Image 1 (cartoon, rainbow, N blue to C red):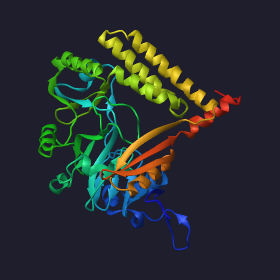
Image 2 (cartoon, rainbow, N blue to C red; image 1 turned 120 degrees about the vertical axis):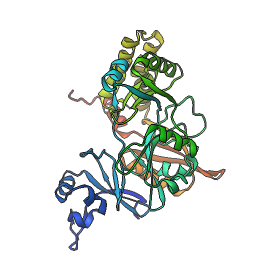
Image 3 (cartoon, helix red, strand yellow; image 1 turned 45 degrees about the horizontal axis):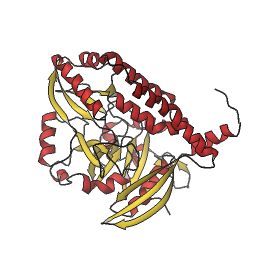
Image 4 (cartoon, rainbow, N blue to C red; image 1 turned 135 degrees about the horizontal axis):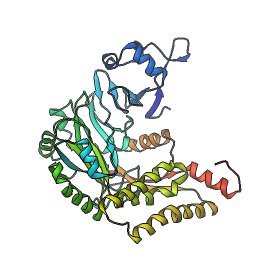
Length: 395
């Protein structure tokens, strides 16, 4: 029986039963021909950058890498385009970064720590898309709890962009101190079908009109206000928040900057999976904290340095002990969904991404299905077992 959520290359069986790429005008939704030439479509297919995607009978095509003005994760369905969310440039020196990319005024908004989704309406069905353009079954199932879906009755052309934050999500277990009970969807942008962000003041008005959660904002600033922006960073760091996004008043580039406390939390939540994560991930977080210390003139405290060392050594050490005692590296997730079938879709979604899962328990309570499952990290487990067995390797 086919999975309710599946991914396949943009290919079809021909009449002779051979699995091959078909002519672009046969396999492409009309929107592809509106945005790409036949030659471009053929090239994208050849480079495996277009992938067919089906969810609950809705057939779509996603773009797996940036191409021209289309970001990775852009989704095409019929004449509808769900634009990918543009990458935001990171700066390590806040003052110099702002002065380099902004000539006059800019807005400051909070960068929250969760997972990025875009919400759009297709054929009357609200769908939540991940950064890569896949449908997130968990978020899609919970959308009626997260936003006022009547928004799309008035603005069907917009894609809501935001971050799912808080406990009870199926992607990360990092504790967010200001979200206690359930996931929250913080909206930080609206995109039209051309991928353009609507004016910031218009977004603020729409969010308030439809009572949607939005990221914290501090208003409009000028280059002379950079000391005040630094004070915002210090307060966010004291309260365990992630950082800020600096947005232009009109068109232009956005930049992001994070607090040192968020860098430490990243280390603490991932070093048990060190063998599965590129070394650059950890180097970047160390550099971010070092640059903060340099710019703000605040030495990293003894407590911070000790906590960082423990994250880099003690947490992987516990993982080694766990494997030595016959266990495996795994994390426990507890979520709730509105519909039981969303569980199978979610686990299939995670397995497709190479994550092995194991369902532990399922119970119905208060109108929801409460689910407990494991994510089992086979690469890290296998790596540590080989090293404990004395197997050598080249480095």
